[in-house]
Length: 269
Image (cartoon, rainbow, N blue to C red; front, side, top):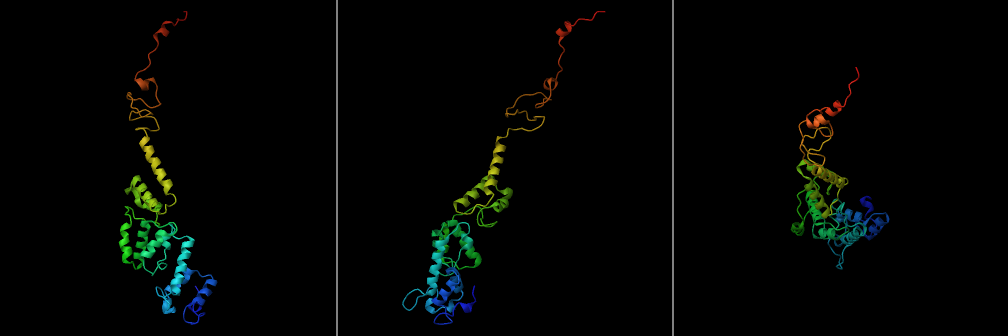
């Protein structure tokens, strides 16, 4: 930003901000939002009728309100509300005064992607945290914000990402994770990288455990008495899976074939 003395020395009154100063700053590359933000803290450098919310002698809006309106149009023409960064990027001085109120909420709901009601609640929480004044209309509007079992923003970003899943730990089942993910998606919150793959992995693990035949294992002994299809079959003690012979299977040795012995011819003596 330019030094203050470079902001108000080109108009008819050298110690007041005028349109000549505005034109000079725009030519230097300053945006309407940058100029507006600077003038919020320099209202004393504006004529009385040019200050926020006031009018000149002819009942017309003054310089500040006109610059603010241009800044609003710039915001709407660029991205407007961005679901990924809207809460963090919100400028409480862009709409009306520097409080959080009706104009902020209506602008956020209508601009760009359009904020969700839950995101308006996140804006409200940010305003409280930063000590921004909240008007009565906005306070009453908060009854429209849906409630969630999970505190989005307490871990990682304001959406739902792997930090949220890690914070859930073993206290939350797969169904709880999916419910939190779905709520975030329905309310236009950002779903972080890796969340979809992680949930898919958990679902596959659960499906495997549900379909795995009881007692299925790699190795020799099927201790539970189930075959590879999961069907219980009788077996004698000592029978192994895919191992052993007649002795192991039936518990007795193979008898010699007597007919073979009977046909044997003794050698001549």
